Length: 259
Image 1 (cartoon, rainbow, N blue to C red):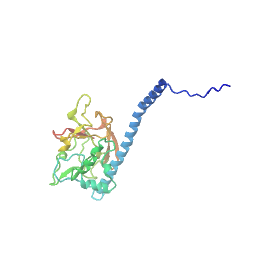
Image 2: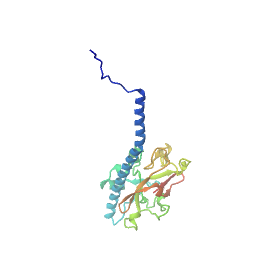
Image 3: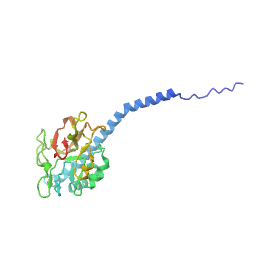
Image 4: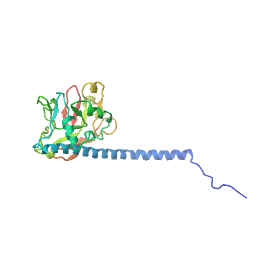
């Protein structure tokens, strides 16, 4: 009697295994850009929500103060920048629904410094957003960066009230979009968006980097754009190609601010 086993299994050959691995690698290469775009789109939506939350708190304050928006106070007279916010204004926003996370764009990859930005400066905090309200020193003078209106087209100005003209087109806050023009080269025609030397003391001396929100990849060569919060409370995405260079800092620091 023939007891030959007709159910013997044949394993994969090395060639077949390599073909399968190659197909999987090709599929991943095709899908990864789409997945990354989907993740960034989700981060943009969350960023828009955070800006709207912050803006609502500021508008609620204005409603009970004859249209006046919170004034950022600079007790130590430091050279306050657009992303700085004093503790009183930050606390006001948090009492109206904001959290620490709403001050930091989910698209910004420099998460390791958030705790230091939030706690290390005493009377103010460094955030991931530009605030278009002026910074006032304790003696009543305006901080140096805010003595002149933003540059570029559109007759931009620093915002002090919800009763100003054209509030639907007047920016109240925006994603922090900045580049270091001191690092321009053939690969970075605008400057560097992810390696930005800024600040004072150890934050400059230790070459800690500030990073622009919504920058694809790691080259720092481009920025996709940013969310803009307007004085009437709505938020809109603005592509980088539609932004302008608005604020230039001192010769000591190289960043240029865009919105």
